[in-house]
Amino acid sequence: MYGRMALIVVSGLIVAGCGGSEERQLLEMVGKNHRVYETLAKTEKLVYSQGREDEKILYISYLGTVGDREKFIISLYPDIDSLPSSITLEGTSPQSVKRLAKSDIPQPLRRSVPSWFSTYSVEFPLVTIDKFRIIVPPLESEERAVYFYKDMRYVVDKKRRILR
Image 1: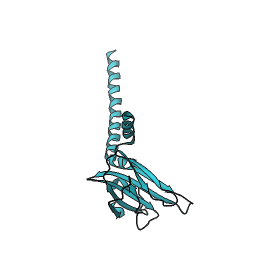
Image 2 (image 1 turned 120 degrees about the vertical axis):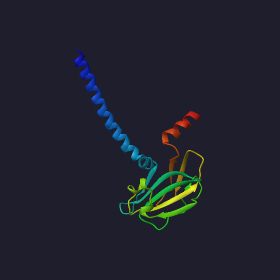
Image 3 (image 1 turned 30 degrees about the horizontal axis):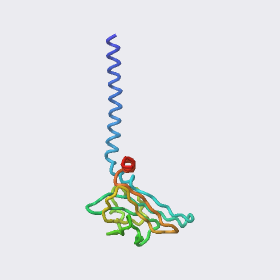
């Protein structure tokens, strides 16, 4: 009787230990790539399509607050010489726009931005609200607004619901 009970307990511990090591490995893998996932979660893609050959693609990635500025990486296809100057963040123009070489793109985005896109580092003045938008000028026909959140989206929405 005690032998069977001991065998069951030992078997249970072995199974639990194996599951724990797999979970640990998964958590370590996700932990190493946490910055990549976090950055990609704050990336939006706009597609302007008038036909298969005339397609224009725009990636906007929010990197967060750096000092007294909001930093974004904007990638465009097809490759153009300059970013449209009328792009705004909550009505304010960018303070700095710098074209980046592929090697200068931040590591979390390097794998997700194709090399044939023109990529820019864009810095705007600091915004104090949690939910804000970038207004993209008309590349084809209409102006578009892209919304970003300083926290994760559900945290910002939950705060707003509580305050109402």
